Length: 83
Image 1 (cartoon, helix red, strand yellow):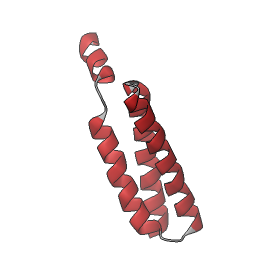
Image 2 (cartoon, rainbow, N blue to C red):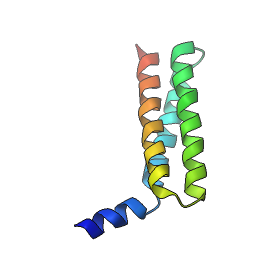
Image 3 (spheres, rainbow, N blue to C red):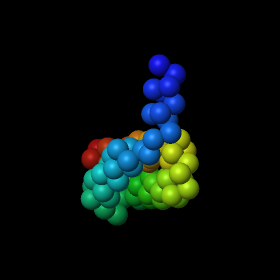
Image 4 (tube, rainbow, N blue to C red):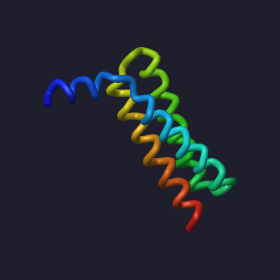
């Protein structure tokens, strides 16, 4: 069990990165010029950029964590824009 967890944590977070990118694209289409949601989408984009940097350094755990944060923030931005 511990080995499976270790392997999962050390593998490249390609799915998480993809999910975050898709959530961000969706948010960017939804927010338009709305300042609050746009600010959240911008922060999500910055987090995703940082995740890419960590991925390039093979720091998979940190990249995964940042990608998940970016996805969450992008979803919040989209939901704020839809209200």
